[in-house]
Amino acid sequence: MLIGSYSPSLVVISLFVAILASYTALDLSGRIATAKGRAVYLWITGGSMAMGVGVWSMHFIGMLALRLPFALGFDLGITALSLLIAVLSSGFALWLVSQPRLPAWQLGLGALIMGTGIASMHYTGM
Image (cartoon, rainbow, N blue to C red; front, side, top):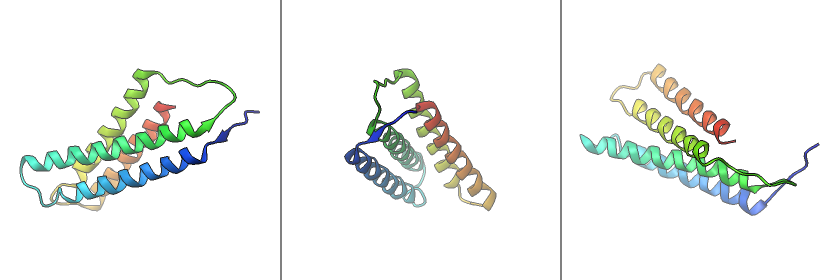
């Protein structure tokens, strides 16, 4: 049986990063509705970066909080891919839900894409 422990301070930092990233992404996405032209895409980019990097950071800080009786390592390429997945899925979901009309199916599709992207990021990053 594998026995590990967690660093409480890193768990709290991970939680704080997730809250801060969510707040930042929601604040930036709220500006999309009032933006015009090219500014819309800049706000979507900012929101997707905030959400993607925030969720990715929360995941890896949480992974660092886990103390195991052996050394762990991460592959740089796969780790970078997991970050890209998080940012792109966040960006697509933000773009989708920022369209002028938002029927229920579109909101559901945005949530599905975001959820699938975040799950893929977690699976890839582990």
